[in-house]
Image 1: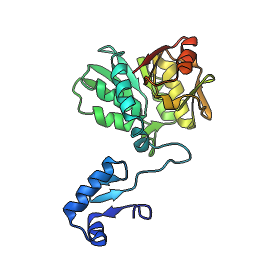
Image 2 (image 1 turned 90 degrees about the vertical axis):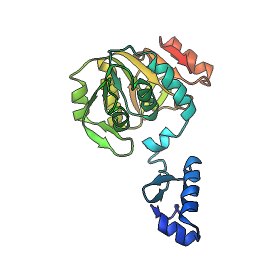
Image 3 (image 1 turned 120 degrees about the horizontal axis):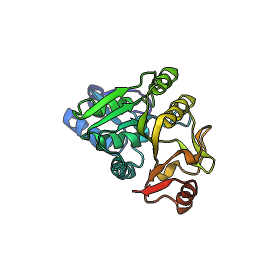
Image 4 (image 1 turned 180 degrees about the vertical axis):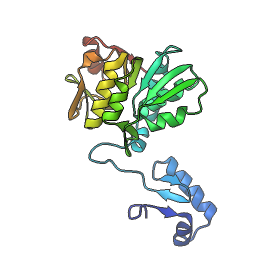
Length: 240
């Protein structure tokens, strides 16, 4: 039913399936847990598919979730209290944000999900970049975002990345590339967080050479040849 409709309300499901509301609610909860749909107020919607080869934020956040959790815990330990830290968009960085929520930090971010997760954190001073809001990735991008970033400095940036090869870090979205280049430029330390799925396939637009990063945190199943490639370029590799 969801393959042919953008939204299914509870009344329609009860009527067409000849089932009670409690049964429908219970089954929707199970299907959401099994990644079959997304529950919303009053019913359910289908999970978003990849768009132009780029997964949106919701879909991306569900991939490699265990690995991202481990990466996030280790990455949070690299940050010192009182620092100014830029948090890039992306689901892995969002997981890091949750690990930092109780820490006394100044966080700068272009990510709406990260801002929402930190808005009630009493020890966090939170600054948003502004800019054009990409509705799929849920990040603010473009000239206004880059202008704001260019006016500050930061102790560290924690950044997700689209692709990693011997040629460097890359992405498939030109606006994302612009903001990521600016973040690397203004940060004293560049920390890349990337699960093993990000290695070995190049993106369309280059972001930076490998030696632009200081530390890369990935999962323990990263292929040894990729870890060696990073170390040859002077990057500290941490596997979670």
